[in-house]
Amino acid sequence: MKLFSKISALGAVLVLSTAFATADTVSIGSYGALVGNGGAALGTTPDNTPVMYGGANTYNIGSGSAWTPAVGNSSWVSFDPNSGPTGGNVDPNSMYTYTTTFNVTGGVYGGFLTVMADDTTNVLLNGVEIIPAGALGGNGHCADGTPNCTTPFTVDLTGITLNAGLNTLTFNVDQTNFVYQGLDFAGSFSSVPEPSTLLLLGTGLMGSAGALLRRMKASSLK
Image (cartoon, one colour):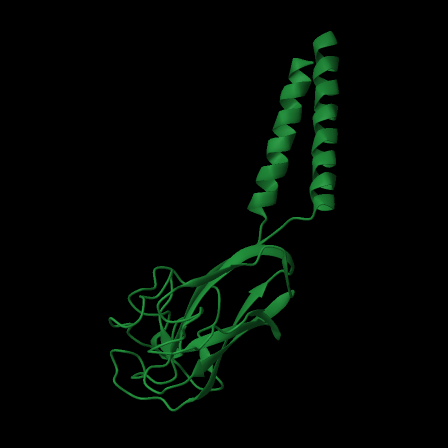
């Protein structure tokens, strides 16, 4: 009986380890298309394409003292290499739309996304808004409400469904009161195994454990 309990425990461990080993995980972050995988702030290569502005390339830009430094493995980006606090350009008031894409096996995922923008931005995943834009308010140098350029805004995306293959994130950066304009984001998605899949896997492993136990007993009787 003790042996069977040990084998049962081993089966449970194998179920969990197999589930985690086969999990589909992607890491995403903002980085300019014209400078490879980001700038000095980027520690590892994200699994998404460089951030694009329409059909145009983008650049890494500095945060200076006005913006909070880029989060995670990311970089502040813009279509204008001089649009940030360290550049000095004034970008006209407008809505600036940036996109990035990533590939996954598809299904239900857990994860998070952290975003900052000047002045603010909303975020759409495959055309569906998952983060609304922040409140502009007095708008001294970025939005009063998050997402803004000084307070990283993080949303929990547990239970979100991703397409098999290509997925697209869209950021509509709202620029008002002129001066700086830019976007920063970082996040991660990990697939969530379906309970039925784990049950089938566990049943198979337990069946194998039972067969092994019977063989061991038969061998001991010889």
